[in-house]
Amino acid sequence: MQIATIGVDLAKHVFQLHGFGPDGKVVLRQKLRRAAMMPFFARLPPCLIGMEACTTAHYWARELSELGHEVRLMPAHYVKAYVKRGKNDAADAEAICEAVTRPTMRFVAIKSREQQAVLVMHHTRDLLVRQRTQAANSLRGLLAEFGIAEAQGICRLGRLRAHLETDTVPEPGRRILGLLAEQIDELEKRIDQVDAEILAWHRANQTSQRLAKVPGIGPLIASAIVATIADASMFRSGREFSAWLGLVPRQNSTGGKQRLGRITHQGDGYIRRLLIIGAQPALRGSREVKANGWVQGLLHRHARLKVAVALANKMARIVWALMARGDVYRPAAVPAA
Image 1 (cartoon, one colour):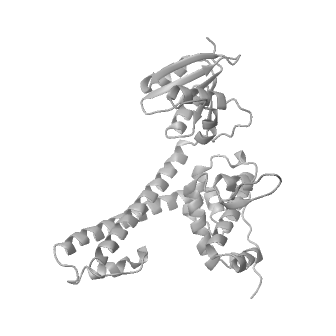
Image 2 (cartoon, helix red, strand yellow):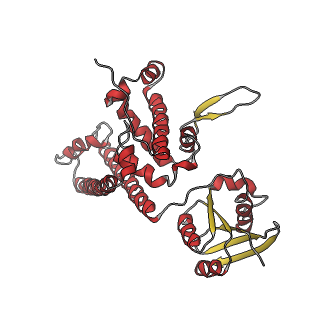
Image 3 (cartoon, one colour):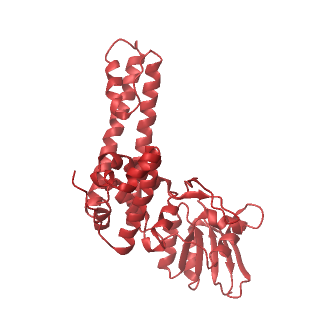
């Protein structure tokens, strides 16, 4: 039995395999337990292996590549079109095996262990920030039950804590709210610790430092992009990279008529959110951005948040150019006041 292509439907414990021979005929339909995966592929001659880019996919791609196989990862929503009928592991594995051989299929670069370690820091920080927001909103909402109303924002938590030192909230409610405030303080300490780790990695990585020179991009955004994008040359242009981030208009064009809508929100939502957040202070504080005629023209016609999204799109294209060409960012000359 000669196997040329294998589609693997990943799972936690039971993996479904579907294999084609050199002539395209089905030669393998098999389930494997997790412990039997590596021994099975170690006995096979080198072949093409396709998998969806989901949880644990990069780990298995690295392990199987070390055995001499060619492993390709694909976005799951690109594979779905090849599922003929029904939804089960066997049908998914067959669709993966079919999709990986298509000449127009787009693949995901395999991340290294170091890249995934950096992303662990970012995902952990994102979780801690969301937990801090939840705790702060809970504290604000509970104090509102006693007629205390303060503006939203982490920077205004001090005002909420000040009310816990008065008798506005009777016991034992005041003590319990104090525990909630202590939890917020602990979360802030952990966020600061993760930020310090990210900053240390950023200072040790030259590519991340080059990206951080772009207005609106700091160590947090730069390190997230470098850790996520294993190879920028897999995108043909900066627009394709920004489209992958979901920063381009959604198209509903037909009959030669172009109809553009809001941004697609597809692709990596974490980096897209960071770029939009970074673009907003750049509109206010960066002299280079404020002096840009293109930006000023947009500000006269559109709301500031919409301009921030457009600036995030431009930042993404600049990032692609710096990574794909190994170039250094050269700021435009700011006209004298």
